[in-house]
Amino acid sequence: MAGLAAPFMDAANRVTSLSVVAHQRLLTQLRFEPEGTPYPFIAMVPQNVTETLLVKHLESRGGAVEYDTKFLSADVLADRGRPIKCRSAPTHRARSQSAPS
Image 1 (cartoon, rainbow, N blue to C red):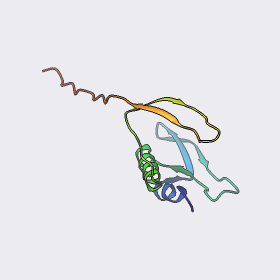
Image 2: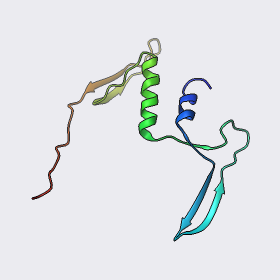
Image 3: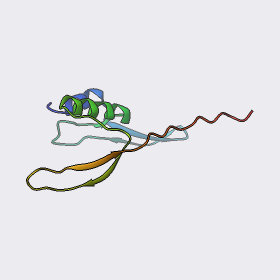
Image 4: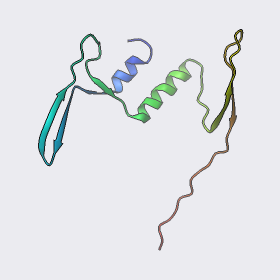
């Protein structure tokens, strides 16, 4: 597998069936059996793992993620690509609120 598929498949929880249960009683069970695909399952990857894999891939290609940044605009220039204008936003940290005494 090329690109990002291999790391995602390694990290995925592979779901091949689904059971619906209510009050300890099985209501239905569905099997996931798609035809004509190399991935005969639902690949469930947690969001934090997805972010880590995407950031590592971007960094391996010379990119970087800029956090606390606001998108301003994107201009299409036929001869020079698509410059994107951003500005850094102030970092806001939530103050912890202690429980009333």
